[in-house]
Length: 140
Image (cartoon, rainbow, N blue to C red; front, side):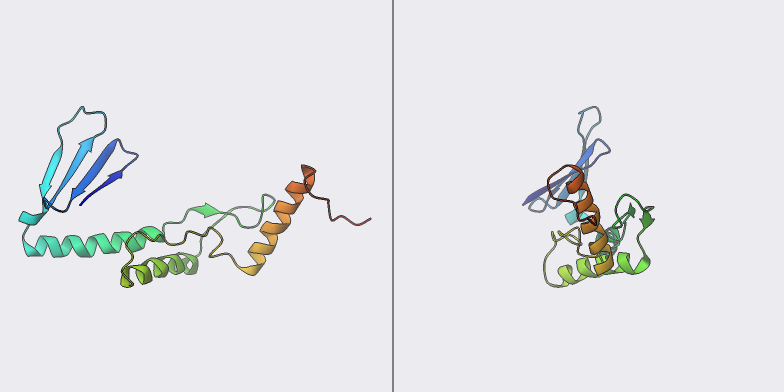
């Protein structure tokens, strides 16, 4: 089975599990490929790689930048530790259930509180009203 991951660095990596190797390639073809014989690594290195990879997979889910669920009128904020941990827990739970490719959430609103959802809906209604798509709910 071959899997490939493209990166924004100009490098792509291919995982060939049948051959037991990983190959990093310059997508412009200017540098020679780097081939790592994973099957030939000793058990300690493979075990360390397993732990590192799982740590990276779960930790990546917590790498949330600035976001705003409060509409355009309020300042953006960084995700809280609890929000980061919630996304990381979702990935860890999916791994435990045998699902590698499930992300922290396919639903961008999964971590939003009821207050955040209400603010988002209000902001969306205001923008739709400004475009004339829905009627404004202003007092008559």
